[in-house]
Length: 132
Image 1 (tube, rainbow, N blue to C red):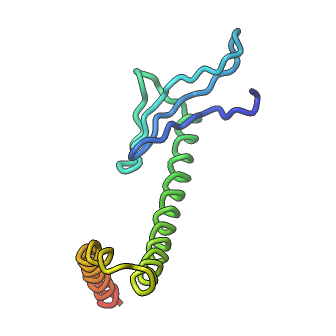
Image 2 (cartoon, rainbow, N blue to C red; image 1 turned 180 degrees about the vertical axis):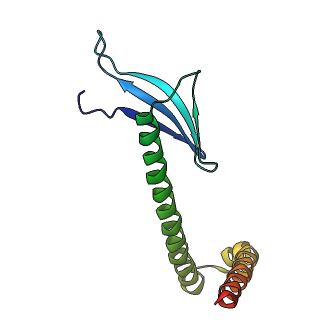
Image 3 (tube, rainbow, N blue to C red; image 1 turned 90 degrees about the horizontal axis):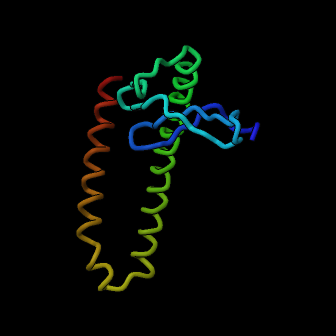
């Protein structure tokens, strides 16, 4: 039990609940005491239950927030790279495997989604070029 972290973060949409982990009790059980709620979108740390957070608590939580934001950003770009792969796989499927009925089922949705994506990408690229 000595290898457990001092803090535990229960991840949720837009942040986490922060707990202090305690194993130094008479029953040698793991106890978790909620100390804060974190909102990553707003950058907020709210103490829980009238608790005053220590400077060490705040340093730890802010460090977790920075690491979590970096991880989420990395996942976002990885998802986009996967989307490119899926588009390529979809193209290959449409060309070599798809039946007429399957194509009929998905063609309009795919064309609209690709048109929407292309419109946004072209506009964003033009904006970047205009800034240069």
